[in-house]
Length: 231
Figure: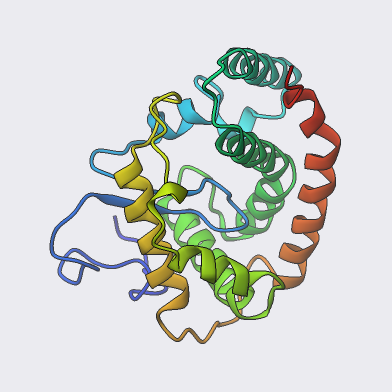
C-alpha cells in the first residue's frame, strides 16, 4: 500500500495481469534462490516450511540457536529421504543444493541488501523494500540470461518436452508434476521468450551477483557431502 512500483512490467498491477486466470506465480532470482512456484494459494508459511525455516524469522536466521535448528531439520530430512529405496536421487540432489544456496544467501546477500536499503529508512517490514529487491534481482537475472555461461544449455532444457524430465514429487509433499511443468513454462517465457534490455540495479550489482555465485558454489561443494551419503 502507498508504495511506488518501480517496474510495472515486472510487478503487474491487478488491471494488467500476465494472464487473466491462473494461480499465484512466485519468482525468486539468483540472489534469492527460492525457485519458481506456480501454485494456487501459495503463502509465505508454505515457503518457510519447505525451506526448513518454520518459526525462524529471516532477520534472526544467523542466530546460533536458529542455525542449529535449521541444520537439524535438514539432517532429519536427509536421513528420511536417503532411507527411501524409491528416492529420485537427481531430484533430491537438486533440492538439497537449493537449500544450501538459500542458506548462504541468508548469511551474505540478504544482510548486505538490508544494510543498503536501510539508508532509505526501510526495513524488511516495508513492502517497498521488496519492490526494490525484486527490481534489482530481475535486472541481474535478465543480464545473466544473456551473458552467463551455461544459459544456452538451460534454455535447451526448458524447451525440452520430454515428460520424463518432469517428475512427480509426491514423496516430498511439496509440488506436483503439473506445477513443475507450469513453472518451467513460466521461466522460459519470462526470461527467454521475450527480448529483455536489463537496466542498472540500484542496491545490488551484477558484479556482486557473480561473486555470490562463486561463494555459493564453494559453500555447496563443502557442505553437500554431508547430505549425499548414499548407501
